[in-house]
Length: 111
Image 1 (cartoon, rainbow, N blue to C red):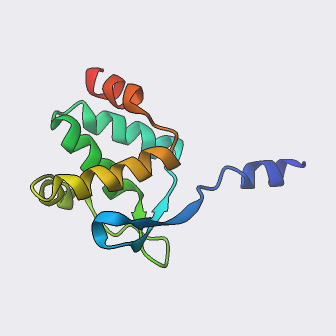
Image 2: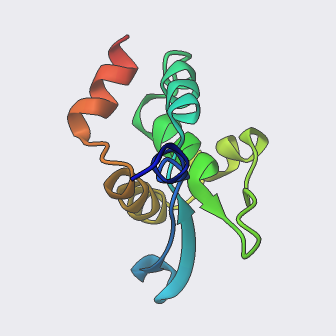
């Protein structure tokens, strides 16, 4: 593997996942970059608990067919005020894709 191939491997992947709480609709998720993950952890320090972390993660990872974010940080409060089962399912998919677990979420909220 040459340097260009190696660096190209760092490009975030985009996957499509069915979401049961959306009647099986497919949603596109993009992996976080290292910088985006750091920003997510920083935003978790500002409070908001688990729902704040989950909504911020969804905003950071759900993308449209052009791989552009569907949501902005302005949408986080709306997601937090909405259906908890949908928030949780979308966040679980995003956490799985980004190898984030409960321990990582708790650590982000603690720091």
